[in-house]
Length: 241
Image (cartoon, rainbow, N blue to C red):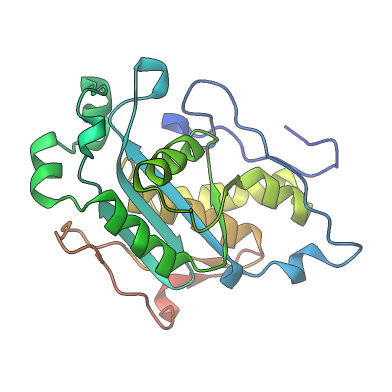
């Protein structure tokens, strides 16, 4: 679907990627003005972070809280399990959500980290960079995390379509980037994997298909699951023609 500015939007992908997880298609929050400057030059891959959440359920199914958050950038991929806060004790948990992410309450209690510790790590990892998600509902879990910690969030979450709108990305370019990301990042329904997929799409649209370093296969109990890479190996690079 094209935007009113002539740019393409990310297409619906299976299992809800780039479709609002509440059922509707997510729309960009706003169009940023760069006062005539080249948006593609202004916004580089080093300036953005992709984020994704797994949650106890979808908000339409009850009071939903975040259970895992993952980020991906040019530096690498990181993910944290979130130990449920006491204030979420009576909130909802659905079998449908568990069937997708496979994270149990027992695992969260044993391996999860307190929300304030997770948010502190996210502050360090994100810094002042802009944060993008493939669904508007991620902002709900982002705000839920911030509210329970009583700490400011590093950055508001913007929908990825806002960035594509800035770049004036064509539907053909977006489609090609999505197809490459589907091939390079087939794993789904864990926060690190989904954030990696999104960052791979955005990097592909930006003009070079740079796949974020692979998330570890074993989910460690340490809050830093994968150290930020200083460089991306040549084997992880491919160019979109």
